[in-house]
Length: 181
Image (cartoon, rainbow, N blue to C red):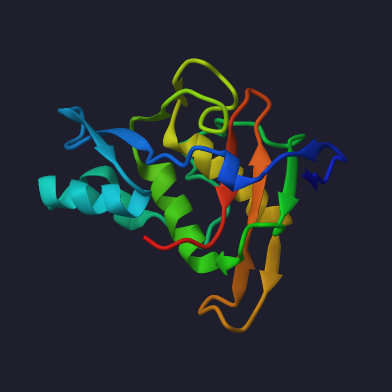
């Protein structure tokens, strides 16, 4: 159990949780075919480039600024984490904040809806699969963790490290931690 910033106790024992590979519904070309791909945002991005070598240009991804902590102006805030429980570090190992910012920037640019299977620990204890409104919803959780959970270490290329977990009121959460991809 870990106590969150708002004083709630949360069971975050990852060994009790199902770790799943997210499924992404994304367009290969603007307004075109939608495909379902599995993996991290970086893995899905690589697959999209294999399907459409102009994918970044077609969707304006190359224009995103990974250093920005806000979504692009034409996108509105999708998921409100302002009063959400969160904790920093704890069992999660800090990771390169620059890499996290890059992943967040991709999330704000990806069309489609992320989803995962049902079950305790896989989907907020829901018995049904969960589909979010957009990939930006995940990015919004990352933004809040970037605001609250930054540490400055010279070992990372960006100098900023981030780790934490934030819980959305509708029963899903975002975890930022070091991992191997």
